[in-house]
Image (tube, rainbow over all chains, first blue to last red; front, side, top):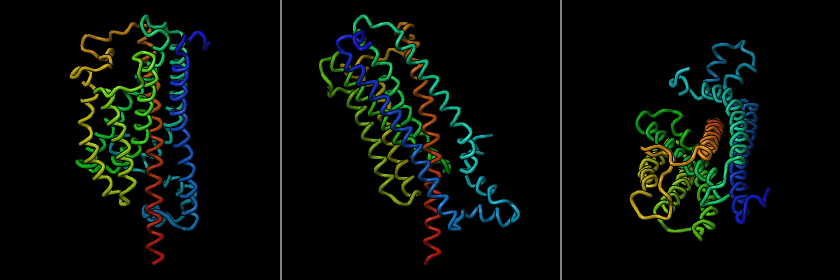
Length: 74
Length: 242
């Protein structure tokens, strides 16, 4: 396969390696960033910190289960 | 759901959460199809097998400009319409645009060495794309420097719009100046000059890269909204502690 790419196979393979690295790097970046942010947000909410809109929603419907409130915030 | 509904970050998060898995799956399918078509495509009569670099270089170069175009529209959204998600969209797009621009520069160099005999030439096309890369880095640095998101958004929006002058320069540099870079061969008034056996894999790869951009951009916007919520909650906590 590599031999069939001719005398400049290294240049071709390096290009595809760079593209793979860029695509996977960006994908990993958004996934790991999302996990970290979700973790931080959950920790803050566990300390009782909620957004103004979430507090207003909770005041209007005190019987709303916690899961629903968190889902609305997400 | 209308565009106005998506101005609400909570609704946008729900919308993005539903769309991202579909877009990610479509990206995988398109890349798999594109790579099969690239493997089956013929060698070029002049470039030989090195033409295969074009199937990733050209889409990355297009996306480097498309991403900046998205940022320019977002900048207008920040300054003119004060859309709540406009700065979020611009800020989320910048690292993705910078990466695609870097990829276009790297793959261009790797193609240039065997074809032109040099990795780099200070000609109009290459230099203007390098300027675009520097613009992306400058904008990322600006957002990180200004802590207040509102002030940062306005400053970045102005800089983005000033920098958008570079987009037509990149596009028409090959027509306006003497350059090693070949002129446009796909988006031409008289139609593409590439043979269909090469145009199809190129178009498929371009579509795959574009859907990848859409997926990553939506995911990065979602992260940026969460980051701003965490910042707001942190400020609330700090205010309550005083």
